[in-house]
Amino acid sequence: MCAAIRSTATGVPMPSCVPFDQLEPGQTASLGKTITEADILLFSAVSMDTNPVHLNQELADETLFKGRVAHGMLCGSLISAVLGTVLPGLGTIYLTQSMRFRAPVRIGDTVTAEVEVASLDHEKKRATMRTRCFVRGKVVIEGEAVVIPPTEAVVAVAQNEKRAAE
Amino acid sequence: MCAAIRSTATGVPMPSCVPFDQLEPGQTASLGKTITEADILLFSAVSMDTNPVHLNQELADETLFKGRVAHGMLCGSLISAVLGTVLPGLGTIYLTQSMRFRAPVRIGDTVTAEVEVASLDHEKKRATMRTRCFVRGKVVIEGEAVVIPPTEAVVAVAQNEKRAAE
Image (cartoon, rainbow over all chains, first blue to last red; front, side, top):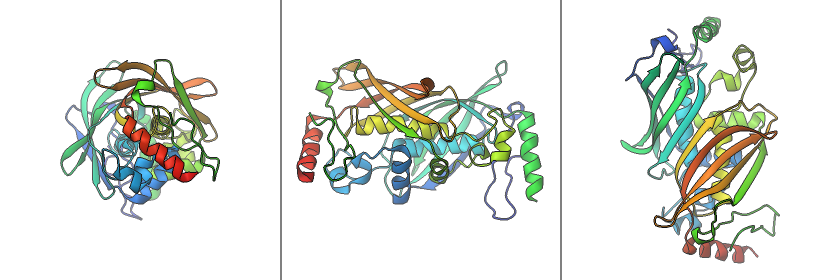
């Protein structure tokens, strides 16, 4: 439908959307990002999570992690990005998210968030998505999301936006 | 122990920490924040979640939400702030978080994230925390977190930091 839309101006992928009827268990999508010091500073400011384990190298060195680590929720937010911009994408309504933080993520680590259609509730038009984040192939966060994928009407809006951009 | 530490320089609360042995079911802590447009822009940049429902007023007006809404994970990240800086605070290790997004949060809404000690696993030294976010007294996010509260050793580090700041 409107998957893999690209802005002709910038080449940056624009949000895609896959309506409920086109979802199938096993479909996957992912987004990756290298976690920078700037990400940690901005996330601390937005979230008010100023725990020194994220911001204070000397104190973080004395913890179990032996150094600064990124906020778990910062890495988890990449899952929201995949759900909200790729699969199911634009128009998705986020109902629930569970996360298990399995390993620390450090500055310089490249995190890939992957979502996979796990099951579909055809009566309620809801999708359960398996959600995982990886660093160098190792799972750092795993969990599950339940979403309401976009309707055909939302897809039509997105297509109008795409046409307007062309 | 080291709860309610304040920086003498700025008056800003410094991270507190409550070690496992001082936690009791029913203890609560909270942090509040007004969600601004800047928060949404910064969170979009950090998370890569550029869903137009957060950024494009005209398109957001056509959705179920009838306007721009904050990222659910942005509001959820305030929970991480309370857990990591107040209760149990500095040194807490975040194991799991579940969130149910019950209502949209808009620019200008003041979100209060509250955590409550729900139960303690004395064998594994883990705490289960009830986690909720409120806007005008209404629950917008509810869920649960499992954490490893700080050890006495971490508390000692925090106390050293406090003394150094005085």
